[in-house]
Image (tube, rainbow, N blue to C red; front, side, top):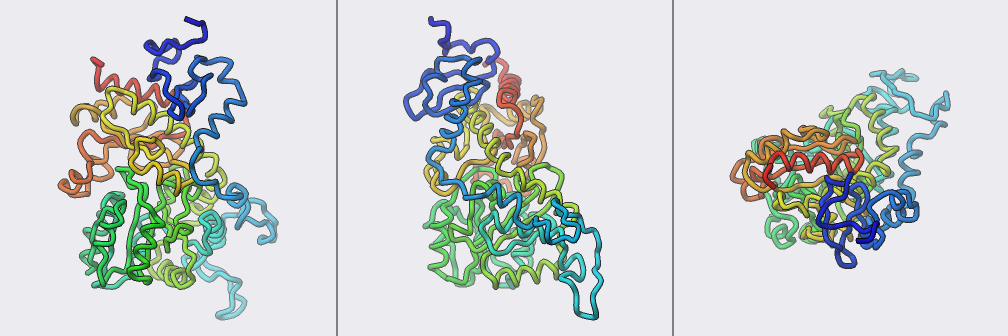
Length: 461
């Protein structure tokens, strides 16, 4: 065997945690150094590490291959994230970084005449900076910051009245499901669930009283991808006054712009990727329509679910590295997903960046990349899933997602425990389902941790 040729049957020293496969055909994935992969690089099939790992031309090749086929990146995204809403000229001090305005109240020139701010719940300078930046990144005219993702959900839903109908994606964040089923219904709203990945099912769910359609894509935790453009056109053709909401939490503004695809509202739990540091709880709502903005702005103030100025400062800071973080999340998750999909201890991997995903082509057409979220079924039973999770060393077993650190969780027991068991079963949220939020650590360390935890769950394999 040539000295540079990888023996595909035995992982080479230092790469024992990698799952090595035979050389794939063109346009498939091939293993790279440190657990990374590219689509069709003959050098990757031959070189174990060393020189190729330092090859700058290959690094560009790998980056290009990862995004091959996806929608074009949004123009000037990084520039707008760094500069929009941050203009030093708005402050007498000419501060380059917007200051944190902690004051709860603002002096007026005379009764009813103020400089733009009255009371911090109604408006705050630091919050304004964040809202302007997010609006730019969403391609929106307006943005509103709320105290949490669920505060955003509640604020949007308060546009409706008793007797109005909501059609929701059948698979969604457990907290959203709980709110719609156990609170919104009790307030007199009619809530219907539909698989929005099938336009015919969405159309069948629409009724004369439908006022709101709530789409989550990709869904949490089953990673189903809905065609936002098709859904929005279908709904608006049925009734132009129905408001289409897209929960964009899993994608962030960097990888998907729902408003450009026909949605009326784009919302986030900014706690996740938009902030990206697991130290803030916040929600965001972006719109283009002035009537929606005025109504939601009223509700933001009247309901009072606003974030603190310090939290606004932190999320505003997090946006400055969003483009860098999302690309690394994509890179790491792709490596982890390919490793898991090739591993005999894993039953199924659901990652929209893999060709095996049922909406893979839609994902590439609709988005500019993929997030770090992976769902998979480990072979075996509940005990195998819990052993895997308990054996993780670098991944933290914790709820939430989208931070720089890698997290793992068991949806049926943790994030989606509030979803009725019968509904979980229909959706596929089983005892062996595991959700990963792949962070920004080194790829090799991510794969090593997954490999050793799988080994603990299946010691004989």
